[in-house]
Image (cartoon, rainbow, N blue to C red):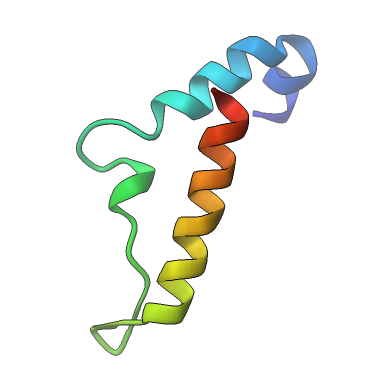
Length: 57
C-alpha cells in the first residue's frame, strides 16, 4: 500500500475507501477480550474509522 500511496495517491485512497463496504469490511471489525466486546476500545476504533473515511471522501 505504501508504494501505491507514493505512486498514485488517488488510487490508494480509492482502495482504502472500498475497504469500508461489503461483508468482511473494516466496518465489521469488533474488538473482543475473552469473547466480550470491549466498549471503550470499540468506540475509539469507530472514531478512527469515521475520521479515516471522512479524509478519504
